[in-house]
Length: 80
Image 1 (cartoon, rainbow, N blue to C red):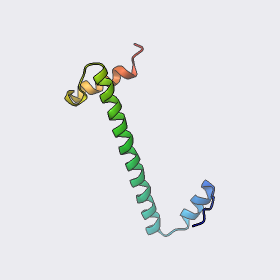
Image 2: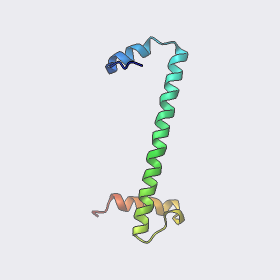
Image 3: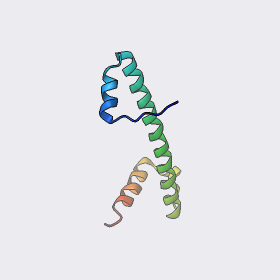
Image 4: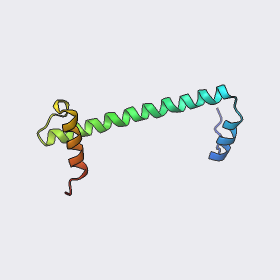
């Protein structure tokens, strides 16, 4: 299969020419892809938070939601 290079504007122009059903299918595909990448980022972030908790003698899984929020807030504002 040959590859072609298009500018963003060209892609948008082509998208505008599609039928409403094809536009919807493409948007759903893009949304699914974005959700998948979000899930991957969240798993990575949680693994990093668990590692940081362990370094401080805490267990992320045993913390309440309030304690988790406070832990993250402390990480963000370490310079206080």
